[in-house]
Length: 423
Ligand code: GTP
Image (tube, rainbow, N blue to C red; front, side, top):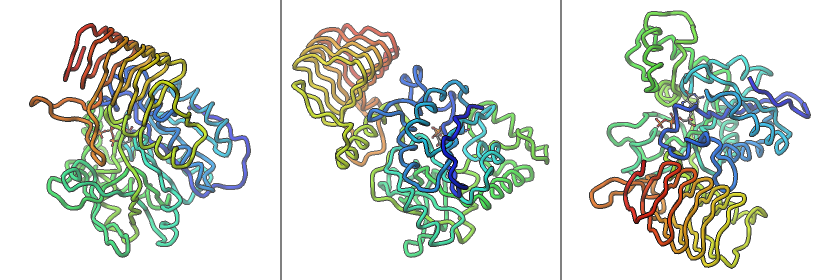
């Protein structure tokens, strides 16, 4: 267990926050970038993805403790927690490591004693892989107004996209959640689960506990994360009626939320602001753009004015990156120590750490339509990533053109290449 001590203990907290960070077997769609950095720590708009979550939580007045729950090694978040404790001295922060993937509800339940310490009344739960404006205060207001057991953040997507998400049927007048179905087979609603929740602590843990109990009597009605170890948990749980750790593998989305909808005290706050999931590596580019646009609207001092080189819009440049004269960089993330030589063009792309883009080279993806939640497109009959990604220390030769490619670390691209995964 890794703990950063609180600097100032000011009264008892009535809301605690948990960020579900997952672990190394998750985030596979974030490859090749997750080969070099755990997805929650990948920098989007100049900050690790989970820093954006902390910044939002910091605006909720009564949160004094934030717990990261995941199954990465303890060392992974050590520096991040140290830095964050300086920036957010109002929080006590700790990382609690699951011994294996326990699922989004299983992790919470496993650490229920730590979470319930200090008797918080409410629990904020944030999926780490979400990019949005996190209207947590509005969720709290709804929670109080309705004397809720749970509030979920929802957003509208196109009818076509809806079935890729958890779908919420609600009463538009009362905001009460009537039904919740994870990735339904047929259309039920285009209001979807954003992966941000506020729970009454006195309700969420009993709800998980009931789901665990039910699983022991009706094992086949519940679903589990797909990794191998979970299959063995399933077998163990089916014949085991006690509350062992093995029987705790549960997902909020599949196993808990639909039951909460049976209560009359589950509500949805619908955000009209931006929301994206950060699943594929390419999805970091629209997330980067959305956070930068938000920072621009807020007139953030972190944004730098344009220079002689043509940068932007929606560009993040890492430390020590060097951009040559006449280079054009647009809608892209350029990571630490990258060199982009003169007159090169980088658009809709991510250039991994220590990468080199030669003079007059072009590295480009295809713009993702505004409002789209997909980062793949079909080109010449083949599904490819719309964002071009160069893994760590890739080199692109002078005048070489790279289009809609995903390139694993340490590759040298010496000829034009399009619509390929370069291994
Ligand atoms: P898919 O969406 O099915 O590909 O899986 P995913 O892991 O990308 O996302 P999921 O929607 O299942 O998870 C939502 C959030 O919970 C993400 O931030 C994950 O990192 C995190 N998460 C997923 N499984 C676990 C788990 O077993 N333990 C913990 N602590 N977090 C998890």
